[in-house]
Length: 318
Image (cartoon, rainbow, N blue to C red; front, side, top):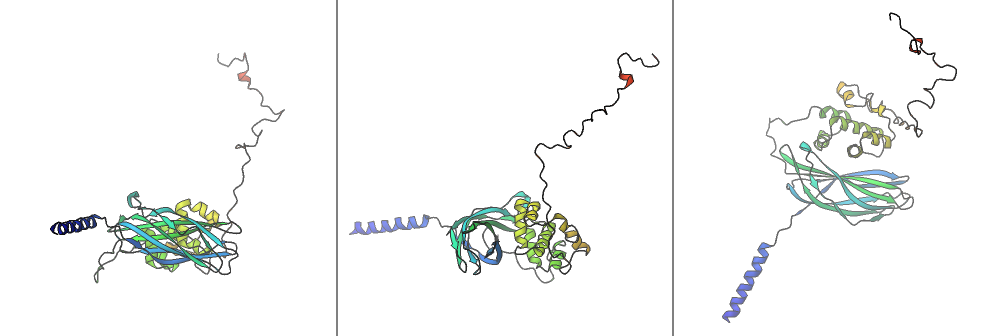
């Protein structure tokens, strides 16, 4: 009997030891949707999806998860298939050090018929970077897919913003830093200063923010955030060519300098449509600076020989 009791005590001790040494899994941070984006991704096909997520008060390192709703408008001409998700890049990049992150999708491929909505999940690991006194990370995701009848490819952008717990609230009378260059941009476009400051904290320059807001005002079904993300990947030249906007459109009254000087084009006086982007002329293969034969002298117009260079000619003074 005593042996049985001792065995039971030993067994309980082993079980408790194993339970204590089991590693505790990191808690997954579930990010809440912050905004939605709607866009015509193909002729007659409009999608609405969760384009931004926010995770506040997260640890400096851990895991995140987002649940993305995709809605295919009832009047859409065909169904679509959401195929894959990839992590494009991360921001901000203080001192050139970007946040580390991964992204894995579950529930794909996903078919969404007209009038239906469906969800898929994206999760992964992250490590914040310090910007000032707090840590943050912005994960820029690219969702790829195609329409099922016309096979038109499309890309949906999703931004996941993670940040550490905010510091203490400033006391009454304590000054809070406000970026002087961001204030006139926020006022001109009637955008909350916090939104413009958030883009700036993600590594976007003030001039690029103003450019994206001008373009978003001129174009349809595209947001300033989408333009900023696209420009950070491919450059403004490719983005403007994609939307058929001539570079000169943003030189006269549609730039940061015009906003600062008070000469910026307002909502009521802007052009009704963007200027067409000029097509690149195709250069004939093998063409040089000058047409063939341009440097050749026509027959009968050869330059007369210089007498001083003729054989046997004697120079004066010798």
